[in-house]
Image 1: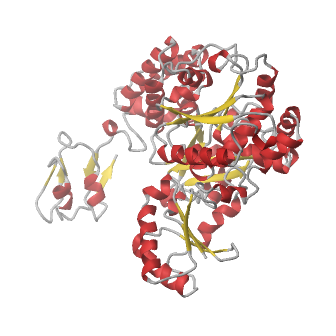
Image 2 (image 1 turned 90 degrees about the vertical axis):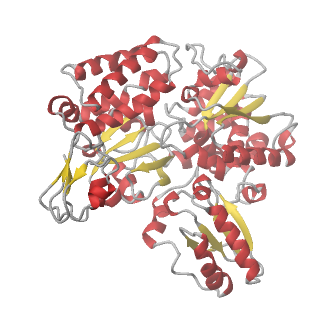
Length: 584
């Protein structure tokens, strides 16, 4: 029997280490024999962590237990490990178990299943078989052709054909070539790459080996942000194990090709997600974009031909080589092949990672896979593509998830972040939040991005503070267009997207802020007021919980709020048992 405890970052944050310690204690105390206690990465259902899977001796999943805090461990050990019966009190509910049934897992095929720190478990899933096949049975052009047949597009945001980039680097002159994995995942609400690196690092290494062989690279580099310590730790373990097995280093797989991979820790600059800024950082310079052309495939790292793909892109490669490009192309749509991993966050019931075939509707992903909106609130919009993406309103919820269809809405698929919003989200404030992020992350090299985003942010902050002016909307549109068209790199060119899409679909909210001095979502403090209705019973609970003593009144009589003192924290409404306090 095997007990597997999910220990991705989400599981550990939810207390998986304490759960593991309690399992060790209870197994020892009850003298349970023939039980292996091990770990795995995140399986995707982050809202259910800590997750514990129990497997029978033949490898069959006997039970999946969820939200396993230490106080639940003794019952599981006693009932299941000792008694051989499933503990129904902690087992996953059928509606939650169905989440995985709605998915097609290629990138996440091993996440939450295997121990990412044991290469033997990866090898047991045919790990490194694709790399061996590519190096011993295929020419570099055969590999590139298979990726072309698959129709694999870069999963980092732009959706550029992967085969074309590999072929361009291969065709560039020079004996020194480099392949780089961009693991500088910086979008707020995005955690796809981190989870793959934590849960299945060998899949990324194998994809890089195949890509490096196809383009003729001498070295691979994983550029990962230092804020991902667990991902870095498991990558280092995986690299050491791959070298010991002969999958990296001199003459790998018995060929005359020498290839190794190293890690470069980034300082967390969002702009380093842009290829040329990433290259500058690799070279020890400040992460600032360069003009293109020349493109990295011609002159990249140290002015040598360089190919850059993100984590998810590489994680697809071994599966494609092993199963054939046509099998991958059969999934998704005609122009957007394969699957896509999304991080569901925000006002959604079942937050976490999902992997679905391209072409599914947003409605399917949000409601069928993600379980719908928290507290059964009304769906308002979804932000896709992070700070570089845009907002898609409820009326477009049937939009298929593909590069072409999402782009038509004004958003982008991006790296896969989906931040779901309900009626309590102010779209003006949401645009302000994302623009504040990109403005702070601007490298400052070009004026349009450095100054233009700052001026746009100042206008949005005024509007949210109740100081909007006539003409602000038109000025925002003018600045957004100029920044988009004039900025040098992708960060600046896409920074106005959240503003442009919210203006496109929620212009009325901007107008309410400016002309009616109202925030319909009740999110902007400067534009809301609290008052007590005649439902008040004078219980004094609101007054006792007000941090600034803004509420006055005598017991059993209607209370009043002093607007001059009120800081609009909402604590009074949260504590009122009679729904007597309203926000307008």
